[in-house]
Structures are given as structure tokens and as C-alpha cells.
Image 1 (cartoon, rainbow, N blue to C red):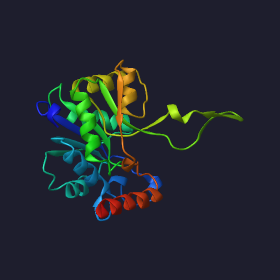
Image 2 (image 1 turned 135 degrees about the vertical axis):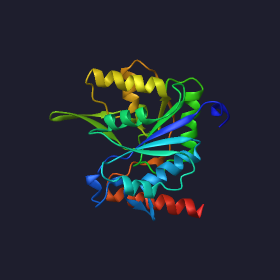
Image 3 (image 1 turned 90 degrees about the horizontal axis):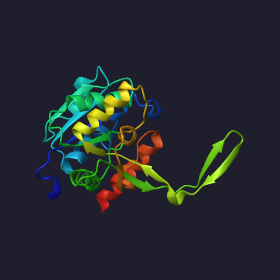
Image 4 (image 1 turned 180 degrees about the horizontal axis):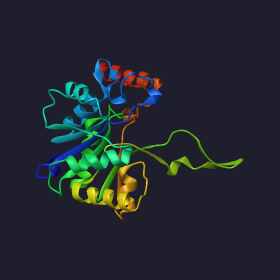
Amino acid sequence: MSTTTRIPVVAVVVAAGIGSRLGAPVPKALVELEGVSLARRAVDALVDGGVSAIVVTIPAGFEVEFDQQLDGVPVPVLCVPGGASRQESVARGLAALEAPADAVVLVHDAARALVPPAVVRSVAQAVAGGAEAVIPVVPVVDSVRRVDDDTSVVVNRARLRAVQTPQGARLGALRAAHAQVAHEAVEVTDDATVCEFAGMHVSLVAGHRDALKITEPTDLVLAGAILHSRKES
């Protein structure tokens, strides 16, 4: 990652969700996929992509379990309690990072545990190269309709993209953007929206379908198939 060798690349992994739709007896990030938790797979992917320090936001009361899962990661990893929302959890993670304001920071969902390291590098390189905020996206393949009351309208999917993580920016800029949305009591669902609200331009890079968001039991089946395919190749 030649364009980022002089700039630290750090990350916040959002793993504080309970994941009730997955129906597991433990928080979603602790659910195992072929013997390895989603949290550990997500952290390993970031490390393989060049990240040098990571803060993981976790559900309160599960500190021991997460410490066990993340033992042996070859970069500094700090677990901190998350907040009541994803937005609050990210803000807490950003505050806990010990890195300069101009460091590249990536915010990643533990539920996207199989993100390829190449996507991680692509986002980091784009931020290091001057982009204010960067998100990985993939084309929408399903037909889409916009529903308004009792009517629906077909939406041209050629102009639509599905947004993934990690999403990147400079650490100081993202902290300031989160402080702004919190001050104005604006609720957002991802960091690209935080950045846009703060007036930052969001650039797109190619994501990957392996970085599916594991939300329901069928997603675990798909993720297992992806791992099997990787082993075969």
C-alpha cells in the first residue's frame, strides 16, 4: 500500500449489536463461522488490508469474551463499550483511537466479516490520496420499486449502488463530523451520511460481494459457501 505507508491507517470495528435477527445466544459478532467469530474475521481482514491499530466497540458485559476472541491479533486492539445506536458506538470508537488527526480511519461492521483485504486497501488508498470520505459499493442486481402509499414505481437500478464497509476518512474530520451530527441531534445509519451532513464529498470505490452483511441465519450459510469457495481456489 505505497500511498499510505507514511500515513497511519487505523480502524473502528462496530460489534456492539445484539443481532436478534440472527437468533444466536450470544452477540452477533461472537457468532462463529467455521470456528472463528465474526469479530475476529473482520479484524483479521482489516489487518491483512494494512490497518495498524483497531478499536472494537462491543456490548457491555462481554469484555472477557471479546478479549479471548481477539487474543493474538498482531496489531494493538482495544475493546470499548458501544452506545445505544451504531452512530454513538462509532463516536465512542473514534474517541478511543490513539492516532494523529490526519490518520486514515476506516469504520467497519463486524457483520461484514468476509470483506476482502483488497477492498480495505482500496478505501484507505483513496483517503490517503486526497478523497474526503470513501465508501465501497457494488451494483444493485435486484429489480427495485419505490413504494408510495398504495402505488409503486420501478427504479432504474443502473443508477443504484449498495453501500458496504469499511468506510474511510481522515480521523480528525470524521470526529468533527460525528460531533456535528450529535450536536444537531441528527440520526444517520452510516458514516458516509455523517460525512455528507458535514459537507464532505463522498467518493466511491469498488466493493465486493463477499462483503455481505451477515444479519439472518441464511447469511451464515452464504458466508460459509464463500469460505468454502476461497479454500478451493
